[in-house]
Length: 225
Image 1 (cartoon, rainbow, N blue to C red):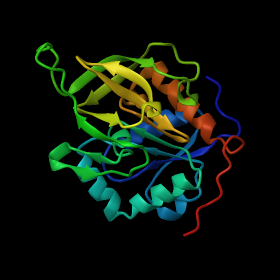
Image 2: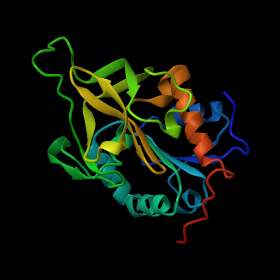
Image 3: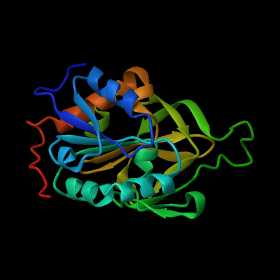
Image 4: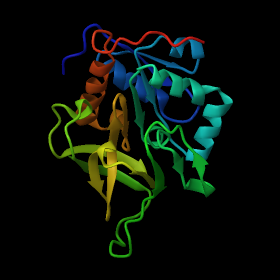
């Protein structure tokens, strides 16, 4: 895959939950200058943001609030900085989640996060959903450019987003029931799976995101403190 020129700087947002180092290494493999940081001043200067995450939605939002990152991330996105959320990081993009009694999310995309329920007709499908699964594209998007239909990615999750606007769903998967596995609107994107663990297709998606973040493609002036 061809790296973007000039190479963008993408921050792996450090909120203390998730496989930040493996995400950083995957970004570097596609030609990105990646840095793991939660520093507000650094985050204001980067070309793109990647929010990873493994764990529970309420705990992650509590961490983001404690670090002062909720308002900052909203402001950076409002200022035009592209953002990609992966796994739990994708769920955090929505308005709320029902997990562990419920919690408010970042509200960057409309909808909520609900429990994945394959239903009684599929007793062989255990939770969490772990393993490779197909994504079928619902509409064209720069985040899926050049990927086959379907494409295969590695999933680990028990909750899924339920977008409240149809245009937000870019790709769907099936685990007894269909669910939105790739979402996006404008310059905000989310993947329910782990791109960094998804071999060629995952790296291709990260490369697509990097091209959206390249300075020549998306000029983003720093957000004032």
